[in-house]
Every structure is written in structure tokens, then in C-alpha cells.
Image (cartoon, rainbow, N blue to C red):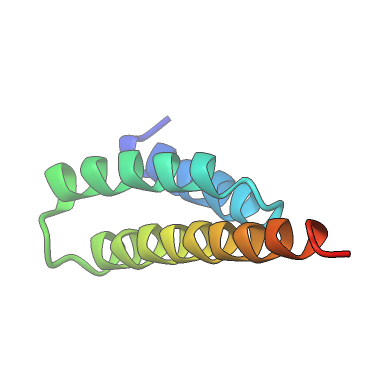
Length: 79
């Protein structure tokens, strides 16, 4: 399998993990994919930029989930 195809497969898996709410795993996989694409294709290649965007989206979902969790914990303690 080509290295580029592996990066694409990792990106697809990270997308699925993000959709399942497994944001930390998605972010980790997106970071790995980004590093691979930067070294193979350079920092300005469209696939590298897509990977950078995917990593940011996974991190944003992760932060939003953390905020929701804090709000939920605060509500459940109320009578």
C-alpha cells in the first residue's frame, strides 16, 4: 500500500471516530496523518491543509464535549 493511501485511510478512520464521539482518538490519528503528509507532501499541499483542518475540527469537537460535560455535571447536582 502506498504511503499516501495509508494517510488517506487514517484520515477516513479519524473522521469515523470523530463522528462516533471518540474525539481524542480522532485528534491523535489526525495529528499522525498531518505529520505524515507534511513530511511527504510539504506544508502547503492541499492534502496537508485538509489534514490540518481535520485535526482542528477534532480538537474543537473535543473541547465542545468537555464544556458540555461540565455543564451537565453542574446540572445533575441541582435539586
